[in-house]
Length: 160
Length: 245
Ligand code: SF4
Ligand code: SF4
Ligand code: SF4
Image (cartoon, rainbow over all chains, first blue to last red; front, side):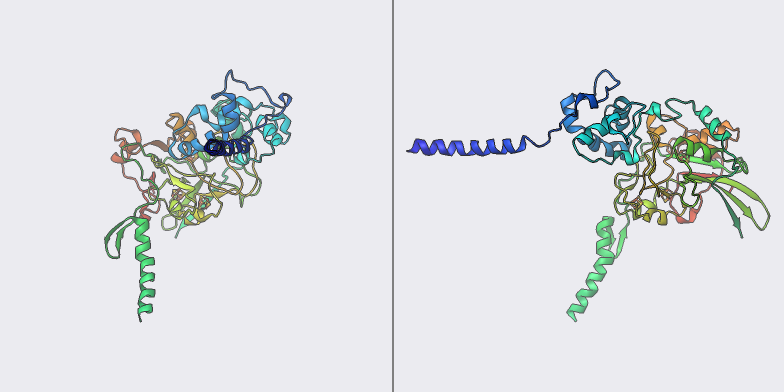
């Protein structure tokens, strides 16, 4: 009799643990979309193993963003711009998620994200950035040539 | 009577006690040292700033304005009333003498920034190196900071944007201003887009540098020649200083 009780006592926590494990096993899982939807990354190797990135990329970005933004301590391996530069094709269009690495997976998993409301959704070499693809002076010259208004943003103040 | 007293007390507490809790240090009853809520600047590290010599700034030249907006992807949306301005040219006329001059004004990167004081979400903040920024992840677009800024340095983004620069995220519903080209600072560059453009056009009216480094060009100039700040009476100790005004 005691042996039955002991066995029951031992197995109850085990059963509970099993149930909890069973219940949680569905959480935190990301279903990768079909391979046809995933654009090839342009680098040789990701900054973290694929399963880590699949599960925790948002935590890594969120965790280090305050360090980067508030203190200027930037980790090039975990930078948002780095992800987009490597994974998103220069011809990708966010409105057509099948062409865009991030949007394809988010759409497939029905997870809305706001990153691209402020961050550019295209890699640096697709955006005319003076520092990546266009010589700064050249780009300013082009800009100046297109400017006909001599004093944009000018404010006139008179000291009485 | 006692209830009157306690009502008075709580009102007093609201004025002194509660404020002291924020300020941290009560020197005497009712007298307390006001301390900024944000982490203070690092006195041992750099403090980045600009020196603008208005006698060299050319009337009608807007090279700095265009370079800044090009660098940071700030474009006109065709509605000048709501277009963002990170830097603008101000033309001053002294009516008594007729003397005119012209100077660029951007966020002055105040040491005691009112925009940071009023921000309800801590989105407005000052970095340890003195750069004042908006953390757009937490900015709720209330625009208190725009009201508080005595230099009218901040702009609100009214419309959805696309094609931002990778180093300068900007989005609808948040407030922004000159970042002192923080992306360049963090890359180790020691110049800003506006300074570069001014030098390129041969005016040499702007100097960027470390105000805490006594050997930097900007510190030497500040030491050797007189300078002032706009609205120095407010005692915000801006990192942008002017000569000739
Ligand atoms: S100039 Fe205005 S926006 Fe810039 S730090 Fe000072 S108060 Fe803030
Ligand atoms: S608009 Fe944004 S940065 Fe300015 S006070 Fe409100 S929350 Fe802070
Ligand atoms: S320092 Fe950079 S962001 Fe600020 S006004 Fe100059 S170019 Fe613009």
